[in-house]
Amino acid sequence: MPHVLNAWYVAAWSHEVTRDPVARTICQQPVVLYRAKDGSAVALADRCAHRGYPLSAGRLVEDSIECGYHGFAFGCDGVCTRVPAQSTIPSRSKVRAYPLHEKDGWVWIWTGEAERADVTTIPDTHWMNDPAWATVTHSYLFNCRADLVHDNLLDLTHESFIHRTTVGDDYIYEHGITVEVDGTTVTVDRLMPGVEAPPLYASTMGVEGLFDRFHATEFAVPSHHTLHSGITGRGRPREEGYLIKVLNGITPIDEHTCWYYYAFCRNFGIENSAATEDLRIGLSTVLDEDAEALRLQELALQTRPKGEHDVLIAQDAGVAKARRVMSQLLAAESVAAAGPASGTSEARYAASPAAAAAAAPPAASATASVG
Amino acid sequence: MWLLVRDNAMTPAADGSVTLAACPDTADRGEDWRWRVWRGPPAATDSGGEVFVETDPDSVRATTSFVDSGPVTVSRRAGEEVVVVPLVGHHLVADSAGPWQRWLHPGDAFVLEGEESETVNLSSAPGPARVAIVRLNTLNDAPLRWVP
Image 1: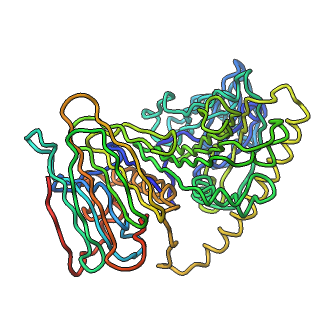
Image 2: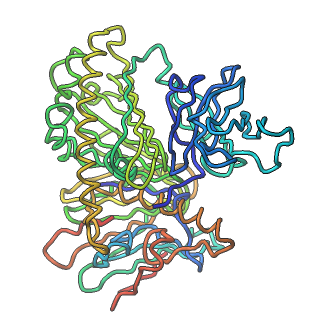
Image 3: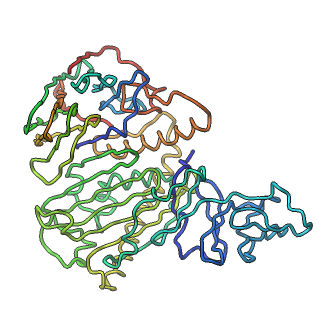
């Protein structure tokens, strides 16, 4: 299962990257992360150029990482700085260095062509560092493909069933959605007017009664969702309300597992440490519920016969559109890797190069030209 | 369900035409084909180009109207699907029962569908304006629902 590589992914929390090398697998690429003496974060391929031993099992010597097997050392740029048995360093002795960028507590890694790494395309996560907001964080290794987490975040009707005791209620799936596709960003917005606050948040908010609840999942395909959520007075603008920004960094490990970096930021009760602790525990329950549900789904999908597809409904528009964008990004990388191609789509369906091969004309059709 | 797809999220076909909306939206899962709305290659005139509608004649009927000046109220019946296609100028579409509103521009497509009736308000920015409104109705008893 391929991954979109020309993208920024969350590689780690900033506090996880220290002078002790740490191993991560990102998009099936083993990476070692460490911090140079000046404090900057470094990411190198976690495989010694000499004999393939993982560099993360070695140690740092100044700003170089020394392989724990035969002592080859590599600098922050991946170039070999020392070969123990001889003074001449082979010209091929280097490992890949990845572009990194630290922002608001996350270390982002670019897994594609280094010259295309543009830090201005990293999503806005400033709420994690904003003193007007309080943040609860979690990290999970999910035993499912990253795509299932994306689907999960874009279709929050699952809250009515999976999270019934925490953030769910039947009224969620009873309200319609508005889906927007803008470039490679897919947003699914749901407004739920005149409802009670979710039980997990109501006590922290210190509110009772009916409000307009909303959540809008903004998916910057392929790696990050910002969930703009909250409640506000009936008929009042959202920005006046109790606001929540849930930041979700989804980083593929391989075709069956992914990292889930999670930050729940709120603009209410920010000095209430007891509420923060309650939310930390409650949100952990929510994530546990998601992790178990998606683990089961992953197992079920692994035995699904080829050619048996999801039965998607209008409610799944965001899910389907995001999958389409993901497919297009993958196709574009595949085309770029293979050489020049047409880059056009079959006409009868919404833009989808992936659909072209599968499309077949109808037996009969009525066509009207207007304009 | 409302679906707004911006111009920058659509890919032209080899002949320059662009599918603005379709049901189903993809051939990938083998759903029965119902309809599509598309635009031809960019026009040299100020008309904004042509809008084409293709349907399965056994199950779907399409009608198209145009709005050259607003504001207007666009009502959608339960089970009907409506595709709003801005051709010339900029147009504000607003929920008649809530705060949601967006500007639509030529190249965008806005789909409204669902099993309950609803209305949206459509108004144009000053200057030349033209919007196509495509209505798709079932020829059978079941509501017409959009399929991703």
